[in-house]
Image (cartoon, rainbow, N blue to C red; front, side):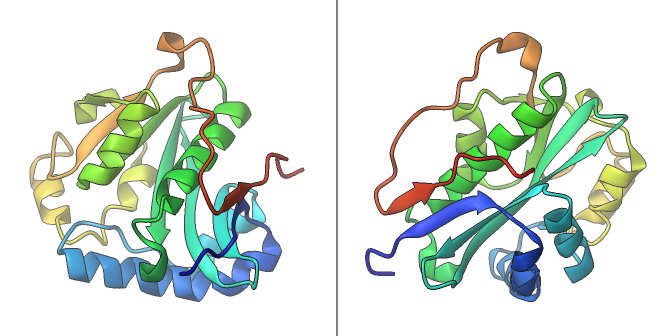
Length: 202
């Protein structure tokens, strides 16, 4: 990557063409890191794009750069920020944070009263979560919706989670409670080489 302009925006049906690459890179990343990244299907990624619940990062020439999405649980009581993945060629450039902030902002605006959850084993994600106001919590403090935990079944560490009756695992659970944050706390920083679309999807 040499000073390419990268656009971080709400994904649309036109971005479904990137779904195969997103799924392949998510699985490859899990293997390389030896960590518990839950596997996603191409259809599930495409569906998030159709619903306007995903963020995609692309270059001006249309090259896929990164992806993330959000999902609701328990009648919109909880919203997860999930599936953050960045193409290897664009890692350590700041794009992961730009995607994370964008998907977090979408979730906050769409479901302002929902608690936002994130489970991760990665230090970088924990750091980004903390900067956005997330706090580490026990698994009992996040959603009990079976749909949420269904996504963990493809994780290499699922046997640990299942054996612990969903009480804990190798991931850290983090929670953003809107009652503790009455104002939007997203930092208004400008990332070099990045242009962020501010308009929400209709």
